[in-house]
Image (cartoon, rainbow, N blue to C red; front, side, top):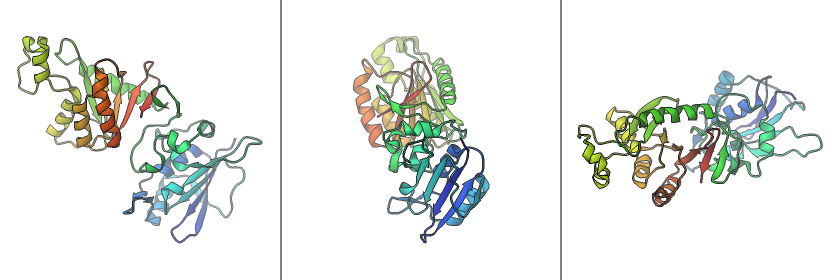
Length: 318
């Protein structure tokens, strides 16, 4: 199998420019094209690339491609990049022998964000019955936002399965677990960390009493009193970030040991956090609160992911 791609750009005047990616990773090329910062939201709500110079400056600096006069028939991929409308951008993997050519929306590659080559992106995409929907973004996705890392989107019992760059998710949960151990609550210890779009840890929080309030044993041991005093881990992480003057807009929050209650869901939405990661199945007494949280998070456009019990997958909860 080759390692190149034809890339056809449609310009605003209707003309086209054809490029050929040099040997490397066509899957990574597709991700870079779909997530480049030259895409902008227009006043009408569509996503386009209004500055054509910025487009070609970007590809000159970030992609190993060269201009050609006609398509190379030996490529693995054909990309069609419509600078007037991101929703019209597509790609076609080289079909297997005897199979017809299939065209998919470019959004199907938006989840390939770890910067590494997927050894068989084409094979993964062929398994999708609805690429735009299965990758979790579709035409509503903003290309300039960060979304989960490379995924194999298959049906799961609780949502879509994101087999992503799981290594970092597990690491963040390990940190959240460490933070949870700082809680003085004798029955439940919850930890949360907020991670920025470059992977930086912005703030942490655990369930405990407000700063300066005495952590008396009798207060923790009396359940009703404890509930009146305690600040949840998620809320503490958000407030710690604000206390330090740090914005959490567009950040992700990783929560160890409990799902999100409705009050923390409100704070997550209002603070601008865009993704929530939990490692606890929603069950028992948390089901009622979760129903409210789920509705609010979904309507606000906050994505929620559950770490699988074996720590090998992230499940996108609908």
